Length: 117
Ligand code: SF4
Image (cartoon, rainbow, N blue to C red; front, side, top):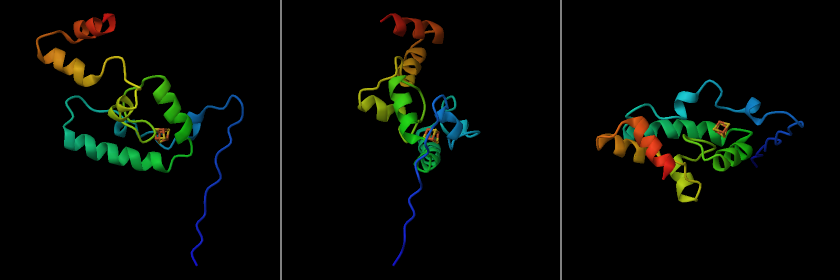
């Protein structure tokens, strides 16, 4: 018979920051897209990020933070697209900003236009 060990959840003291226990320390390049990242590269990068998230002891507060703050990037096993589909849309999705820029707008002007919309 095989015994499966389930790790104890981390109990944070009041005032302790969940980020102190993050598995992704020093790995931010896996969690945010480089400029002009291709879809295949994004899928590979996010798979590596997700592997860290699945073993992370603070996945729950991290997910809550990303959803509540409409964060960009990959957080707690969720991409921006995942959060968008659940109703936690970032204020100016990167795809939308990129499309406006390609249509002849200045990146800052495009952002300002989106913010005032
Ligand atoms: S769940 Fe993922 S993104 Fe969140 S702290 Fe852990 S490793 Fe980082």
